Length: 72
Image 1 (cartoon, rainbow, N blue to C red):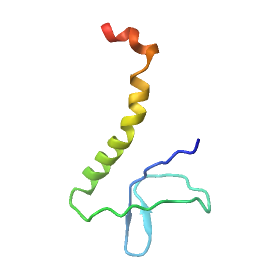
Image 2 (tube, rainbow, N blue to C red):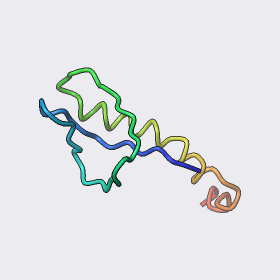
Image 3 (cartoon, rainbow, N blue to C red):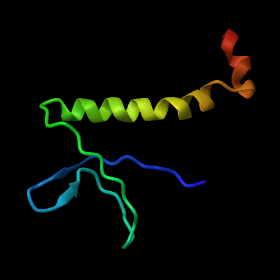
């Protein structure tokens, strides 16, 4: 299964620059999402990452194998 990875970035007027180190192979396909210009861009990125993680965390935390710990 292919996964999507969200990486914060910005446009410096000439190029799109990643804000965190991330290894990309040549010809890697990308999806670009343009966020509204805002002083709270960092907060928006954090909220988006948290929202996208909810499904994965639900799978990890809500499973029968760990139910034994629910009563501790």
